[in-house]
Length: 597
Figure 1: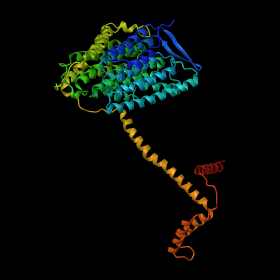
Figure 2: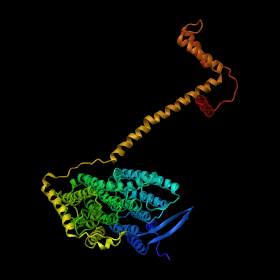
Figure 3: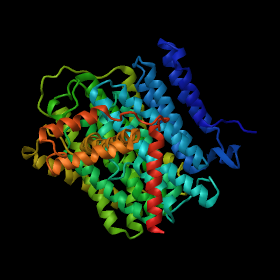
Figure 4: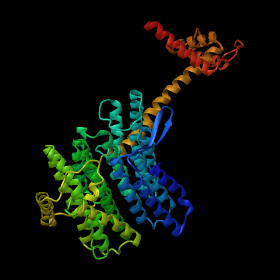
């Protein structure tokens, strides 16, 4: 007996019913949906359920194992936190788009076939874009369209790979794929785009900062983490991902250090932190896979808390640039505490969630003798603490007081932040609550003296360096150019090429064909007289006169002949333009055949 339903069903049906509720009833309703979703997941048992036959394939909406469950748990937990944080929002659309987004992400996680996965993958892209557009500013509208175009391109790659795989294997089963053909590379590209792996990453830092305050919280949690899930499921042990992940970790940190916009800083740190997860996928050992899954779980919570905290700053002050902020620690003390919990978690501070998850990936790299990867990940850890743990809070909360009127946000926003902060600390203090959910048995003890001391030394020397150089460090109102610049400007060049050279060139061929058709129609009215007129025109041009006439009389005579053309033409049915074109192309084809035969 099945006592649960596919989790996607709860959230999609929940989204459809949101407009029926108003006021307090709507607040209660939207909070109830994630609670029902969590109860449903708690009732799920390992195995494969909810299988439907379609043509000769099986569509599976309930592939349940420990890997899918760890993502399912954190998705519904974050859905509840995000909804609680959003209760003050009056627009129905936020909750409709948010539930569709969460539901489709859960649909991906529990899909056992590639067709279902693709459908939910696309719903995820089209529902999440509205969380950007609801900001209703030109920058958000433009960023949303770029976001949608990039994800549509990734979806097409994914679909092409799925079609090729079905043709080659005859199966839609979604499991381990690996790299062994064009289909596997296309599927991988589709997954990597959602994971924001450079150079397919710029959509994230471009779009997330332009989303609504509550929309950015949802966006930070689901798209990149579903990508991590499918990579774990399909490409674990693919070595190239190890190097791509390590590069991501450093790349995102470097851009974050340069940024001035607080949400762009966090956006680049999503790229960096997902790099640890992708690296773990590439290493492919049990410890590395556990580390990637654990870090995805912890990351969703602390990154959501970071976006909630910075969202509270924007909500209260209206500013999002470090150069416009400062002195907020007196006016927003609770927000500061919540932010620092998340900042310590993402930095890997002992007793916070990032310490027990991120270091598992780093330890897996060291244990498997990937020492260059180990050093790259450690270097990224330094940059993370420098930019998110020190730079952002210092200049936003402790920098020069600019006299901004501000206060802590509404109770519902603080409550959402409080739950996320509690979980960040709970997992950091008692990691067993997370480790018991992981796909494989965990043989990793984070709280060893060398490990704790080493991590503290790394973080403390980073902080020491920052404060020693503080007089030389200052934020500037700069704009950091990324790869998205190429398709922003490239699209303008492309449209110019379409509208100018290509359009003009294509029009030339049309004009030439119309001239030829017009001439043939004119010639067919009286071919004999037409030939005579053509001969007289050549004679007048090269000899200068016709017969014994003067040049002036010759010109007058020729103009008179042209004026009276065709002069008693033979009665015939007109030949249509289409037929003339067909005859022309046929003649060209016959000549080509004769000369190439």
